[in-house]
Image (cartoon, rainbow, N blue to C red; front, top):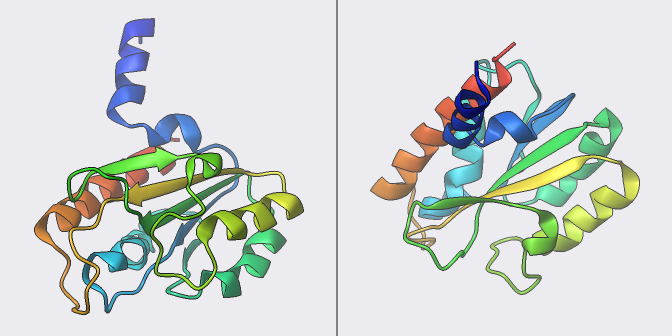
Amino acid sequence: MGMRDKSKAILSNPFKQIIKGKTILFGIGNTLRCDDGFGPILIERLMGKVNVPCIDGGSAPENYFGKIIQEKPDTLLIFDAVHLDLKPGAYKILLPDKLQSTGFSTHNIPLKILIEYVKSEIDADIYVVGVQPLSVSFGTTLSEPVGATINKIENLIIEAINKE
């Protein structure tokens, strides 16, 4: 594979370059609030398809950080619905310092504060895979754009983790 082919592969699957070493996949959100269920639904779909811990943090992610710290991952991928000022279903892979502490969150404790705590305990590369929700009002149905994004990210994660 030439240099150009390799960069094309990385561009087509951004997770290949960030997933390294011992990895934990962590979904956050409330499945009773439409697109806020992005994280937990994605985690549920990845369970059994990838050989890494998949943790559903639901709407109380702080309850799972002790377990994550105990595992000492090299890479922690956090999946969450985040207001990104993009079109619904668009997603971004964010470094924690790019998260606004005032950014939209349905969690009691802001995600940025939770991540700072984890970073103080372990030396892991932490990424937040944020998807722009269409709706976070009460309801159990994902919007069409976020549902399509879950399918896409699920396939990319499976491909990136099972590449060996």
